[in-house]
Image (cartoon, rainbow, N blue to C red; front, side):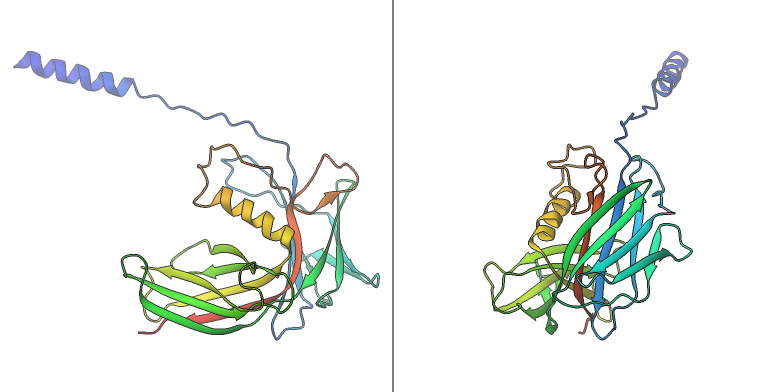
Length: 273
């Protein structure tokens, strides 16, 4: 009996001594500028106040995102009017207070950083208004989820793409999606959201933006690689996700991120019984 106890103790310590911490050595790629330049003209506002964020890429296991200070940032329109963005005290955040948004107007973003000039040109696009909202309490495959539909009318007589965002009170990160009018042109369309966690009194926030075909394709790839269709954080990316910001000084030192402009529709909905 004593011998058995000794054997068990030896085996126990043997298992402990076999534990080994394995460090995953991930190679860091070239540090690149990241441009977050979404110019949103919210309904019933002048759209004069806008912001752009600049940062750089970092290691996979890093807990912080390096912000970029000291850059020169401005947007010009087709009339050569210049809208300057300056840091507002928060590192990496550049703000403008006199921007003039106009649907159909062409704008060019310029970022000068570390002696290199990055540019991008886009048109400010229109966005439809949400016309009605419907709620179903027995949605989902098992009938135990609340479904909410945000309806809007497709912009008439043109090919359109839309970027959708849903803010759920039970999720830290919003849900994103893209939608095209290929099969719904000139008809009513909707954004659908469902969850079994939602209950009466909760508030959902739906945000809609009209976007270009290039941005639609860009977000399709990005969402596929970071969403449920992704093979995990250590999977090989299916494509290099380049945005529309071009380095005019050194083409190979490209930036990440995207410059887009559009009217923005926001609608909040409080769930009912």
